[in-house]
Length: 281
Ligand SMILES: [Zn+2]
Image (cartoon, rainbow, N blue to C red; front, top):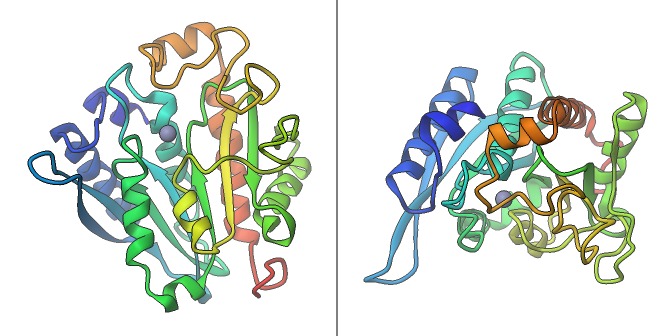
């Protein structure tokens, strides 16, 4: 997380810094021993066309059916993109490392998406390239976005039977005594347990793939739409306050608590999702 936010700094989609972040994530995937590739794509149309890429790390499981775990590595230009979303990439890498020598029930496709902040370009591209077979083989998609600064830790998922990733994550959190809950559903636009289509889970959800989504924010304040992250400072994402210095000073200990809790939930989730607790089986 520190490398992305401080050695590289802001990682605006389509820029040289985003390419540096891509290479960094690629080197981390390779170090962990994942089967690593870079999926390049362009967006916009000339003369304002931009290049970006998704970094993909594959881990073979017992089954060829797979779970996609994604976090975007680009950021806006303000601040350092610590919360949004070096935190998500950090937890993704931590889970991949923790599972290095573990045979998981499902294969796992770790994806660091490019160009999220300019309209979910990376995740849209990946989803658009999925063949019918791969869609069928994909049990679920777990998105990690902005895990550090928000007041409360949440996990979301689909409504109904398709919400099994959220339900299992909540069970794991309860067992491990971790303070992870879900959207209370105060806002009728976003029913209890779910969230909006504003991050990289959306293109997969649109293909009918069940999603899970980890985030820290506060659904009790502001417009109760999950956008106001903290009582103390409102939203921190996309502002000059999205730095390690600010978050540590204003919310001492929060980054560590959140990242370690989310890492445990994600790692345990990837170990325990199997044919008996997924609707497809
Ligand atoms: Zn984000």
